[in-house]
Image (cartoon, rainbow, N blue to C red):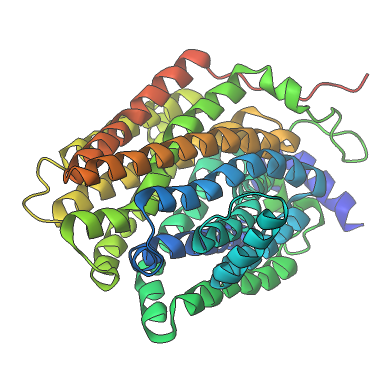
Length: 474
């Protein structure tokens, strides 16, 4: 009975949502849950990088060893993103997100048993006649792989939930808010992880941080439901949420069919999003995974000395994420179409990382110089990311959003693997020559220009807004 009432209110509200009464705010509760999940996602992801200087000493890792461990995460994440998007579209947001956080929380906790995992893996390799791999390296690679499989579900599910609970004009802002959870996680990690490791050991850091995901799972189970079945939504808010949805059949179900992978790959919009992810995801992962090692290698800083510079750096990125979500509305309010407003905002955002080019030339002044300049670049990435994700929910039907985000995630993961492997090789090569700063200069140069290159290709592929509709059933 409630569903029919809501459908009628939503239909009437498309012309004037306020006509149904005062619009509620429950959609922001969902945004808060997405924010919490993304915070946990990045907490779990960053524990390894913060412990990397100590683990490198304990296990004798080279930069290439560390690159292989992080690349294992990125490679599995890339492949999993492709399927995660499809799983989210098939299972639905609630079930798929719950499954994802269970898997990645288990993967995070598994890092504590990396040595046992490595011994077990080498036993299997020995039976197959394959040479053993250093125990710590293969053990951490296995744990990172499981973490990656679960974490791949976060963004497809979060973007789909945003498409379900927010009209198009609000999605970039909502995306910017939940995406800032990545920055909060990145801020909390350097504050909490070294403290836990110092008092209870590095294994405890993985276990305690990994267990937080199960707290989120309980909240998600209680508070999330599809809008049409959500009892906490009033009719006016549902009408507001669905104001720009495509028409539905009499039974409330979409009239078209979901797009297949092959159909999605036939659209330039898919390739524009994928290229944007390919060029820029690796930059963020480079900042996330390599900055602790950069500060340790170039400035001789320990984990406890690194924590506050990193906390300040990632605090800067929160401004970028939320501000980036709002930025396109400045141009839209001045008369630009949503797509033109978003692309204008993304062009200006793409100019900001150029300051990273100054990190090495002026780094001799103080380590705070690269920290602040890289912080500006990282903040720009989050602003860019909030808008890049929103292009998917703007242009694709809701039932295909997860799949498109998954395709883009695959491209971004491949880009991330390339950046990580090249970085590891450069740092070992120039480190052996006593010139590791040269390796970082090269990497910072790529990070600075990647966004402008991505914007140029994206604008060429999709010069103007072109929304994709679901094909009608034959």
